Length: 305
Image (cartoon, rainbow, N blue to C red):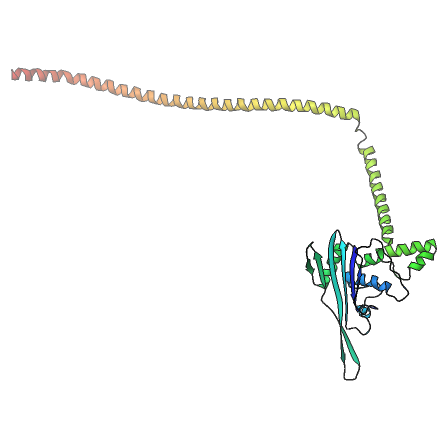
């Protein structure tokens, strides 16, 4: 995140509107006497981004004395994109019946905008949504920003003149290096666990797979080739047997049909024999009737004559 322009009004010691430009600065230092507002500039940047400052959670004390409005605007660049965020607080004062003044604070509308190269487009206008979007854009939450970007006031002098162990302690506190210690412990524990598992696997390899040698592997490959060839022969024999079974079944069906036809032929032969017998009997009867018929015909012919 790189600040480009900071606008402050009614913020701490900056009662009047102030605009600070960082556009043409690659490296800069904020200098001035005590109370000039150096830390306030850093607080304003932090407040614009996260709505709070490292020195406290109550933003009421950030409003300049006697002012009814406090506003901070920050234009910044992140991931080669330009953004602008506005935050502020409004103060309303009312005198009660007892003569005491009652002061009420309310958060003024918050706005987060993105510059598309031509104009500013609003992204969010809700505080919670803007806070989440700022964390996504900057890639740091409030705690991470204050630890990694800001060196809290009062610790800088201690960091410069302190003992080496003290400086290391300050860095550990600022960067929350304890998390890396916990990560190292977790990594070491994971290493020990994996080493134990590896020892168990090695023991199983020695005990359960002691016969897994190159010679055993070569023998298995040979037997596999022989078994593959045998299975191929068996498959061919199975195919031939299946075809032979099909042929035999066809022949059996043909023989059954032939036997059925033979039985039908025998029945027909018997029927023909019976018909022939009947025909012979009828021929005999016909022959017996022909003699009288001839006699009758002869007599009729004589009569006509």
